[in-house]
Length: 493
Ligand code: ADP
Image: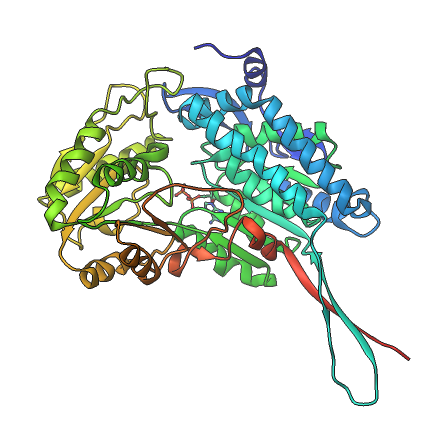
């Protein structure tokens, strides 16, 4: 494996917590190992933040936020320039960050560099533009005989805890940090226990770019670290991406001081292919939509619904493409798909596939056995003969597992597609623009793709209907959840 010197050097020493601009050990000295999912080998020891460290970070983030601090005195233009500088630094370190991401998460180095890392840099630049454009409004008042000037201001909320998952480690960290600091908040980031490395390297780059001490703190740890942040009365907002199960716990735990909560949770997206679709494009879209990021993506189209007349053709096409995918180490240029992130995830995904076979479903592509004897590899699967009650059809699996079910009518497929607690994404394939837009409007999901999948931009808001979450991230809506709206009324005497 051809590791860059910067990556070797980063991995040569145990990783610490970033609190108040300093790298420090956990107060109780605890550490955990982060693992390379392609080899199952430990990469490096990482400090494990306890509630004591959470207290330290909250004190630092609060002090950095307070009026009069260097951060509070920075102008919107200062913040804009700072954000742009960080984007440049990420781009300059793209190869190194991509290697770290591939080592820690398993994804292919090119996928990390051209996807995760490039988007992270772009996200800093996109929000650099917003820092100077957070405007209020002037609002007329009608009080007979008196005159007023009323206006709104958008102000930061305070200390934001960002808690993120392992599927896009750097990018998810950026989804939380960037809008938070654009609006002038301070942040405590808790990366996922499986993938803390790029968030820690980002912490170094933020200091190098000139982010003042305490504005962004990074606390690796497990669920208990996240729970300590969510329970802390010094935290004003939690921004979470992860499972619906943990999202519900966070919503409940946040009630103590009524901290603001935004949640981007699970999905089980329906991908609907009508008989009049461009079938080759729909097959390619189903493959990308189903298996992108090793299937570990909450907006993947894991439930395929295909109109009966083209069902066999679509299933054959998707199955052939799935079988042709080469699974291997993220550093192997021949690999088209890496391993799953962890042993736990590997066992869970294989368990779902075995369960489907036990329930009488058919593996049209893929296997219920592990690929190879080392690393958390799974061959992408396509499962037919499924009914709506099977776990493989109802649960978010977060692996390269797609089910296919035939349908006859539009009403039938809309009802089936919406028959889920989730509402994150959905898709429709049809060359009839009426069908595409009408069905798109009937699907209860935060993102709907028509004749495409995973088409994306940092300009687009994203988030979930139903149990897929609260709030929207990115785009012009992306700052709303990181600001308080203040109404100011002045009497003109
Ligand atoms: P996944 O199923 O994708 O691993 P989780 O929802 O379990 O997602 O975890 C996402 C993030 O939430 C991780 O950083 C994890 O450590 C954190 N987490 C897990 N449990 C809790 C909790 N009770 N409170 C706060 N954060 C938690």
